[in-house]
Length: 107
Image (cartoon, rainbow, N blue to C red; front, side, top):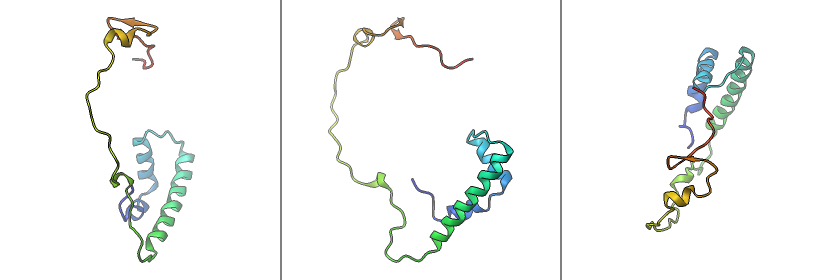
């Protein structure tokens, strides 16, 4: 999905403090130096987008959303899957009718 028409103008008003907050919300762990560097880089990109938006291009399509195209869909039909025993047959480890996997999240 593409951004709304004046997105570059809206974000160009963002100051460095707001950019750092946005980076924190996105869980990007920038150092203060990286925050300053990326803030200035994004401002350059947004300024370029504003210049492009200002162009008068007759006959151009504003936005193109690929997900709005018609796609051929296969018909849905009920299909029987594996039984629990079949699904677990080749599992290296199982317990209580479930797959046992190594813990990846520490509490």
